[in-house]
Length: 90
Image 1: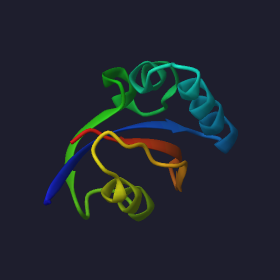
Image 2: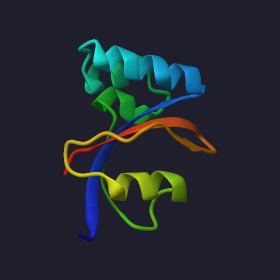
Image 3: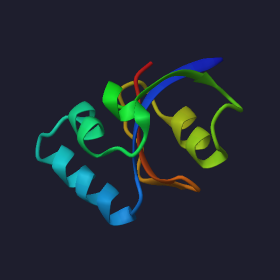
Image 4: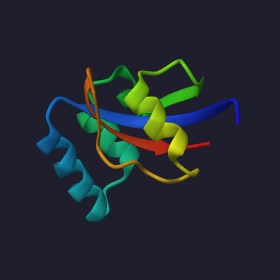
């Protein structure tokens, strides 16, 4: 596995990420929440970051992303950019 494809939602505060997890449990889609709440420009594409390989993302993000199965979502991941929810797409 040289490259994977993920989407993410980036927010500034941990409580915001927890609120988004709750919204997903209530039936909101990851993609719509990314468009509405993500601080990352990728939010406009439903959070889709495209394909990336190891060494292309900051370490905590990369570790979480590469540990996911396709279709699986990470717990909240903290990096220097904020708090991420990561979903593996491929």
